[in-house]
Length: 465
Image (cartoon, rainbow, N blue to C red):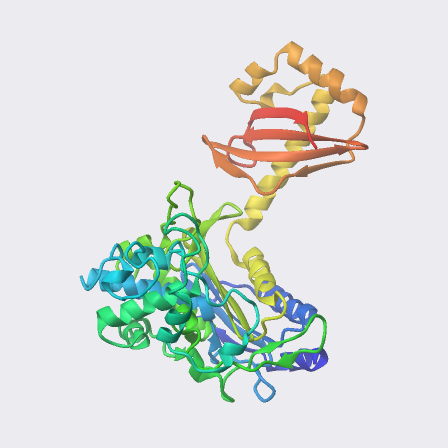
């Protein structure tokens, strides 16, 4: 199967951008990263889209979509829970239309839901309702091969006792989104997919969007999986109705990228709705959930990222938007065994995102300067031009003498490595280091002025584990 999948890389198809800022070298790196991830994980295919400077600069597909189809960029893949951001946005738009409020309780719209008199629509969308998830597993259970309606799912799972009081915890709940979709349809007076098409997909030219259930057929990518390290096999799709408002959409990577560009530019949807969706929800105890309304929002490697993933039977995907960089990465795969989708997204981020090379160069320069200062202190010396006024005040003659007397006997460090990526605080770049000796570890806390030549504000050595 793996050999067959690799051979079908010949089916690769690309769509050039109008203004192509990706170099031939970058595209070659992307091709290599995708091919390696597919080969390493035995995932049959991937479809990707890359946004840079607010423009789709690459759509490309690799491998085989099914036993009879080569992967092509114009084939819709199942995006599963990436659909949640669209369901959530539908409810935000309905609030704009004054057809509901996100602070409405569920019981205002639906009867019989556990905790419905306390749970708000906002809590459904932020996974803080306490309603039990109907599909926490990463496999299909028996009931999924019989057709289901939203009401069937609500009756079986949304009427159980709550897992916790609304707002007390964050816990992913597909059931909560089914309930939210039922409310959206009741408030709008039309099917959810119809509303999304009218308000979002048509205005954005997202013409490939299908109901996920309609793409479980021979004209579309087929889902695959494997047991442990066994052969890759086609999987049986679930019966209709199971993913619905929690994950009902299929589309091309390009069309999902169009949505990402609208997010970056705050177009089609009112700007305040984009902001509301990306605002992380606080729990009752004040802790940040890290999740907004249908999207995760946070910082990764010093960059703000709005993201979500998706898993349906035989498919995995990820959608990652970096607003400040005007960049986005979409990766869709047709296997739910293996992490090819996340590996590809990680590697594409390294290639595509702006200023990453400069950031790495700055880290390298700062690490070299930290090692220089450390070695000087071991020898009882210090170049005070490398330090700020405050750091020079800290390093008295006594401080330098204590650094020398305690560090010099340890000899040459075995390693001197940064601890993760730098963060910002108080106008300084903070970077920690781990310094290892035989049988001993030290920690170094450094604060720098921004920039590769920034002076050192703090240089503190302490015992490590």
